[in-house]
Length: 289
Image (tube, rainbow, N blue to C red; front, side, top):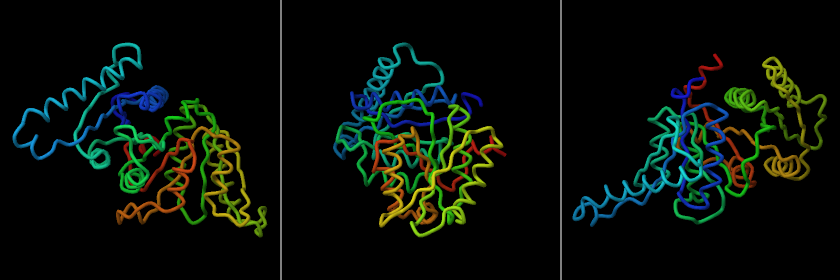
């Protein structure tokens, strides 16, 4: 995998809260051997600045780029390598990220999902909009989670959904991190696990991962008067995998509707990093063909 061909983009604020998010981005940049684009988005200039102080927006962007560059260099502790690129833009952060997801050939976006109000942070509504409309996957991390090495990747599956994209990403990420994959399937309490279609489906996926030399476990989670996302979150809280891969709903991708309750609850219901994939092809898909 070439370092210049594949890129990830991280939305980073040059402040204390952004430091852990930056470290997560640097960790993934290193393990995945990709180019990392670090983006600082500042407030769009108002009418007065645009029309009567035309130099002000340009100066503000220059200062924003210098600020984020200095911040990254301080965290890295050295001059930036060629595979780390700094960028600054003015505007609505979600709109800027959506534009880049369409035009920049990115493998995924990395954002902070922590419930906070520091300058540049996205709120729950903005994160849901980004996840539902982005043309590339979105990795939502929590600044308070830390940056543990990825050893266990959990994938909730549903017999009504395609698992191809999640399986591709799970294979890629597991190989890069020498991690195991845990397949999660929520099953109603009155269904016999051994005879269930869900187990057969999970075993097929497990076999595919085994064929790629990836360690894989299956966890059949019983649902007792709960919604499926609650069972998944209980597993996450107890077992503490380092990454969760879920799929957005097909209808949200094609009609720009908001993400469903399951996806939203999983993304925001835990500090665990959550990687959301959709139906849009990515350049990295060619690695699996």
